[in-house]
Amino acid sequence: MTGGRDEGGADLAPPPGESPIIVLVRPQLGENIGTAARAMANGGLFHMRIVAPRDGWPQPYAWRAASGADKILDHATIHPTVADAVADCHRVFATCPRPRHIVIPVRTARAAAEDLREINGRGLRTAVLFGPERAGLENDDMARADTLVRYPLNPAHMSLNLAQAVMILAYEWWTAVETTPPRYLMTNETAVATKGEIDGLMGRLISELDASGFLDNTAKRPGMVRNLSHWFQRGEVTVQEVRTLHGVVSELSKGRMRRGRIPDDAS
Image 1 (cartoon, rainbow, N blue to C red):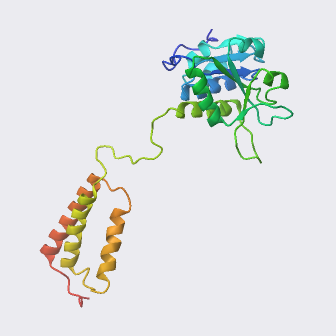
Image 2 (image 1 turned 90 degrees about the horizontal axis):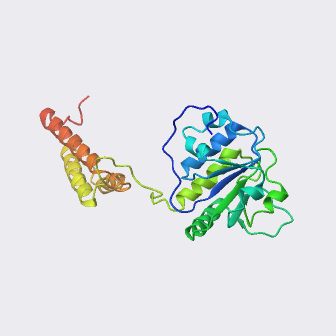
Image 3 (image 1 turned 60 degrees about the vertical axis):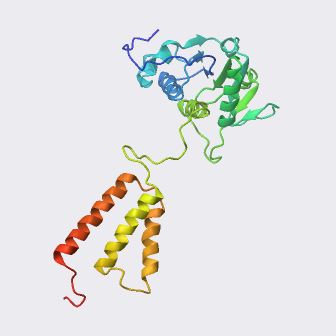
């Protein structure tokens, strides 16, 4: 069902094989269900199951808040109990801020994502429980889980809404196999210059500075040259930046030759 919303949304589809099922337990607002679907789509998750939503289902506000993640909501299934929602699963994780009086494995979101990848990779079905917005999961809900998931956040203010909680897990799930390097330089149409290319620029620049008299102070000249060199060698200068600076040096040289050097005693 679509709850009367307009057809549309991103062309989302479940990833091949098994992937975690996000189980929303007794969610209270359609907007929260929709934003949870939006978070799932960002992390490449697709399967949503909803347990006893307070305001029934479907809820038009869910699709309005999903920001294009309509197909996740279209394919979401409704269940009367947590037991029914996870009956076909082999492993069940549950998010819980403060587990007490229970002996059970606990994972951070990152470790849970790694475990989920490994379990799903063996063809086993997994689910992750997220509790109601105000009270979280009850003890009977967590009794269905074999692993708890805790987010190591600021202990003075560990307050997440439903979509934020889903987003953290979805992000860790996605980045567990994401190959994007953690740090890189955006070069667009150019590339990082080699040391030889930078040395060529420095040679021209120093030659022109000598000719203009900027480096006339014999005692200070070595330090000034080193400072200039460090300036260019410190970071990843691009080929285009080196070319541009060559152009700058050329224009400065032409201007110096056209106008001549200004005498030191000129007022």
